[in-house]
Image (tube, rainbow, N blue to C red; front, side, top):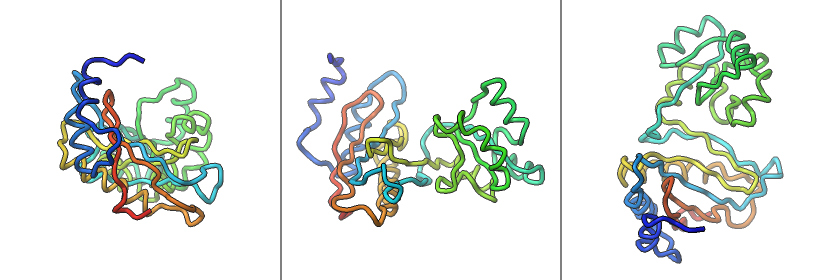
Amino acid sequence: MKHGKKYVDALKTIDKTKLYDTNEAVALSSANAKAKFDETIEVHIRLGVDSRHADQQVRGAVVLPNGTGKTVRTLVFCKEDKYEAAKEAGADYVGGMDYVDKIMKENWLDFDVVIASPDMMGVVGRLGKVLGPRGLMPNPKAGTVSPDVAKAVQEAKAGKIEYRLDKTNIIHCPIGKASFGAEKLNENLEALLDAVVKAKPAAAKGQYLKSVVVSSTMGVGVKVNTAKYGV
């Protein structure tokens, strides 16, 4: 695969054999983000678990201290007595069966996060085949199934992200935009790593954090030294 000049130049600034401290890794990634748009800084965490086993699943959510830099559109399913609170918290869409029908009949998907009160999950469950494959199904572990839908909306808008293993035992998450600068990106990265470490399953054996790599959307991966986490 042939890489462009910017990618090749970025490669020259990074020692591929070195493990960088978190602040160095995000500083390199953001400095090398030279596309014509504000690149997203992403982190890829390979864990020493086997996601095929239910007792080794790693999934949760964390509010990044400095947000993600992305405008999050929220759809809330709740009973009418909570409509006003959800709207005041900043929800973009609030309703019940009307939105189920809109999604099913019109293939409407103009939202980024779906939040539901527990008493609406019977209704929302009908959307499993649509929302599930897109990672949009509300889930208690992610904080998107909650009796306090207003708080869930506020957290989503503030930069709450969900982390979960893919089939290759890797977590992929955005931690902000290159324009944030190294300090804010480092705070976000450390908040995410702390959350993932705390979510270590009791059944996990051996080294837990196998590798952590930070990169911008179009950039080169920078390996992170995870020794301080001791897992």
